[in-house]
Length: 169
Image 1: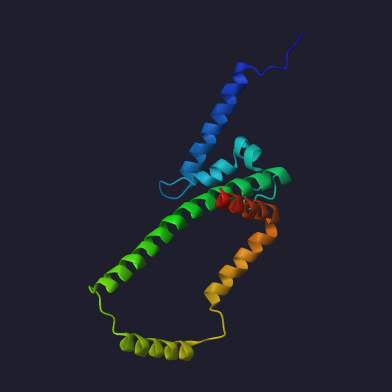
Image 2: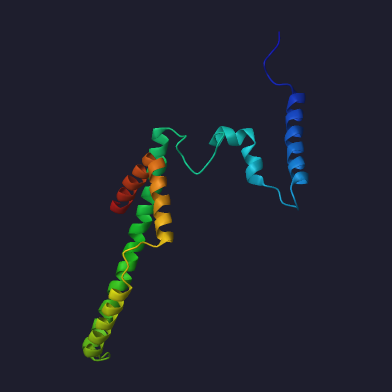
């Protein structure tokens, strides 16, 4: 009666084959560096975990997994954004309060005519520099974001929902 359990010798052969593949990559690569990303992608555990064509997109996962990934990352981002936002608002508000207190106490004197003159000069410079065209760098980044959102609608939706929940908690 035969069993389907692997033999001990086959395990040794598989380990030796993996070791020889790594050695072959190390020898064939230029210099002393080994492209570990490419080596990992060739391994069965990598293909089993991330799929044969692993890329930046998570579209190969199920709908529930995509929503979960987006929701968790969105919640974490929203929660951190909320805490940092409160700290920043407290710091800025406290700074304005202290400036007003110092102004009221006479420690600070504001030359309002000079402030008005500087504001008019800044407005004129902004009118001169005003441009209706979007710079190419901004346009390319915006196109990348739109492309990512279109490819990963579920993750983006989950992220947005998680972000709102994170902000609320």
